[in-house]
Length: 396
Image 1: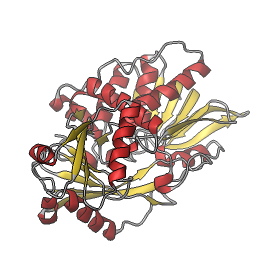
Image 2 (image 1 turned 60 degrees about the vertical axis):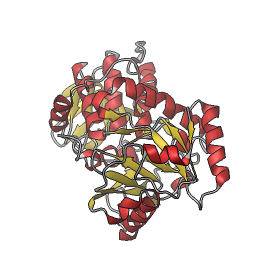
Image 3 (image 1 turned 60 degrees about the horizontal axis):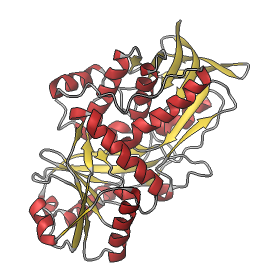
């Protein structure tokens, strides 16, 4: 039987980030993921490195977190991120008041904006529709999730963490109201604390310990099309809705996304109409999408919390929550965004270290990830079985 201080269940960005953070504080950590790293939500995202502008009007606190964390990732994440910048564009059918309100909200939370003339924005992005009436630029970017996971996992391993992909947890052992161990298909791992970072599956993991964590997952479709020449993230400047983001890669763009509530994050219908809608909405911003080949379609599941303060669908909070439980020795994290994964990991690690009487501070915002060499980084993606559809055209 293995013994450790903390077991982290879940190998998405947040779980791997927690393993790294705790290991850097000297905590003995074992991370277990049922599939390859990022097999749940992280590897199936649209990979947008949020400046926070998308959330500035509806969630100023979340927007402020995004701009802070996006700056951190630009500093520490090397070839796992691309510094593309982003554009918010107003089309003829869009409410001008929404454009003005978003710029003002960005200013209020410290997100830099640059208003551009229609000629200037077309010079920056020639593929952009000539129907653009107004535009402004923000410091959005692109995350390559597989690389980010691999670099974070390697940093965790370098600091002593044990990372176990393809190790599904089958039970959480509770004795006298306290978690004492977890069980996988292969062994029992005794632990002083267990972190449930299962994302959309957090409710099911909590049930193993007899705990209820209500989740309200939603699915979203991403459509990759063979369009070259787009260098900036393009956002439709309207209230967040379906098909209002275009994320650039080297020789394609990723169109996203929808938000459909589902009961089962492992079993949900995929709607061809949603794919058609993404192509139509993408064409409205980038006309060359209409004639482009679809090179990939994939679906992701958002780990949204379903409690009283969670909400539903697009009204659900994109913030994150750290939960204590009546069962001692168990902490659950829900919600959040890929951009803020490091901050989420810090908050969880702070809570766990307090319970373990560990006084070492978080250092993850200042310590660079091992992500400067793309070839070495992509080898780590293979090592940790972190390949996901979000960046298969980039990795390797």
